[in-house]
Image 1 (cartoon, helix red, strand yellow):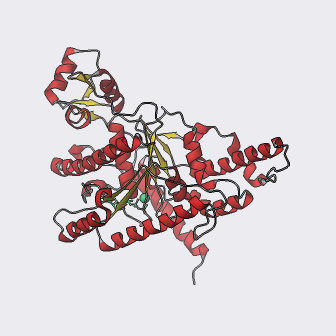
Image 2 (cartoon, protein in one colour):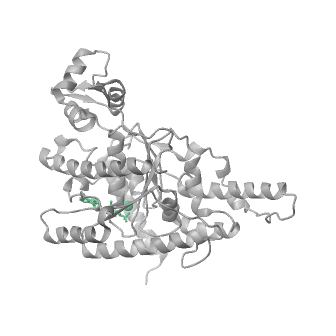
Image 3 (tube, helix red, strand yellow):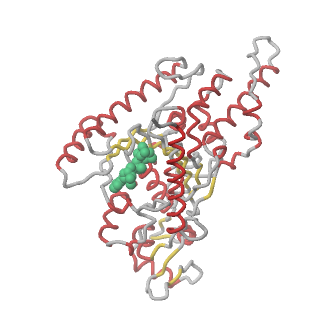
Length: 431
Ligand SMILES: Nc1ncnc2c1ncn2[C@@H]1O[C@H](COP(=O)(O)OP(=O)(O)OP(=O)(O)O)[C@@H](O)[C@H]1O
Ligand SMILES: [Mg+2]
């Protein structure tokens, strides 16, 4: 017979191996770094400018960032900061190279969600974040998943739970409860709400003293920040149920949304949520905060099946939330109606030569119509790079693999991102 002690022993062994792999694989600093981008990539793939035009501009203005030439190479290699400066300073045919953004709007929020495990959520969230940053947007990625795939991929591994979305939720509980209690004192009419107590065990965690920005961590991408997650945050699902009991009037599902509302409108352009493979307290906080829902799904029949039940259950959960009373989903007392500016379905791990995949794509198209993106993300070996830090195709140096493999993979993610950006720009005007 086996118990938790056996599981703990197996984990200890596994951690030892993990440490060994880390020491073998990574630099002594154990930190993720971002590579430079070649002038070919910068001109044609990032800025969308003809290569010789780009070279001509650099030659004509020595005050522009020049990148670095590798000892044995001919190309110049630019950092993302340099690319940002080029984007701000260059105009091509009097056209600005800055990315489109509706004036006077806050950042646009997209939740990548599906309760099917392995649907490609983290891969899509990571690649959209990177593609958007290369496109000139300032990005905030929020990891709602205690598996912390996105956080690890972004290079954040030593995170403690108070700095995850759980910390945001618990801090929100304290603040909202204090606000309600103050309101209760202020209301002289006698119709005041009962005062709610927050136990010392929660107060003493020091969350209330945290600043808004304390939850945001920088990454090796200078224009991408992350609200990370960590394995310890897994207990959030249990803690949330308890917290909501402490203050039933607290609109728990709006906690992260409230935190995002308090960001400056101009702090970020694109906010991406990576959701856990479940419909629960964390994923519903993400969904509630989102302007657009992006549902990735693999190309198999079971994945289609699972995606179908996901949207059914999500519909029920959102209905319960809108009505504000316990139906199938423990929605709580506060009515929180939710609408999205767009809902998109995206097929992932697609093989164009596979008849079954093509048939499934057609089936998706029949069912979801225009909600299905035109370009599935293709199955590619390029994203399976192992190691402590997962890398996106944008991060992998194309010289590390067959140029054609890299280009095909990148082109597939670029098309998917292009559709994402178009949908975002249309929906952005609606919020
Ligand atoms: N386009 C692709 N080509 C090849 N492999 C892919 C592709 N997209 C995802 N994968 C692989 O599929 C696996 C699952 O992907 P991912 O982690 O993105 O899914 P997920 O939905 O976030 O999973 P979870 O539900 O566990 O959070 C990973 O090993 C990933 O490398
Ligand atoms: Mg994931």
